Length: 384
Image (tube, rainbow, N blue to C red):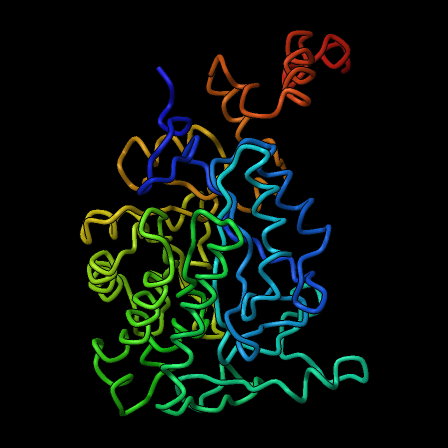
């Protein structure tokens, strides 16, 4: 019997060959907001490694939503053709191409993680970009101590912002992507509006839960207007953020989003504050899976689980027990791009080596027949 992990799943009219998803993995490596050969290599190895769905990292819907100097963009039609190359390359190697759309909000102008992951210092090299950065948020409240204070978005700036998401969705479709995810988590702009800690507005976008989720709903409506009805729409939410927007509020939001055309909730946590979330202090395998399980059960919507999902049998158990419909494998698949094939082999799937192109699968199957591929060799057994 084929494990559920390796069974196809239909989302609207898009079929994934399995339930393994490569989530958006920021590379911070764009040049002038455009993808490079690095992105082609980075994404192509996951598609060729056997994943069912491969997401392009958070791609910004407008210039001021840029997080770093290396972010990708879809705020202009000029970006369609370069992004189409990525979508086509992913599809060519057997995976469904997906893309995440985002807006950094008050966390903009940030250094790359390996450069400190803090507020970006102004230098001679980045002065022009740095000076032009318009950092905005729901309120004039900084992300944390030492971070720049954003400019609160004026009420009349919100409709053009919502429209920018819709136009970016149109461009994503024209570029050939088949799955789209709206990034509403990790302390970025949509999450900032959701959070009572970051959003202290007194107009129609602040105050009550209903007002604070208004922007998220309007963005989804705009995206759905420009994203084809036969293509699925995901939304990433921080189900718990230790900042006043938790599971109960997200379940209520997910119920509404389902009626607006969202098909899958990508369940993560944290990010709205520079404080370390409580759940991060006790990391364990699948530490965020309960969030996906709760949203799936209480909101009646499909979910994707993410967070220290390391082993194939662990992923299979998550699916079999009904905690989620998809599993996202992030850093582990960066460590081993052939993770789907490796998991299938360890789970005894006869077609394990069919998970990857024959250019690789033929030789790896031959390697396994010769007693290698995770089985200690006679040479190793003789050492001591």
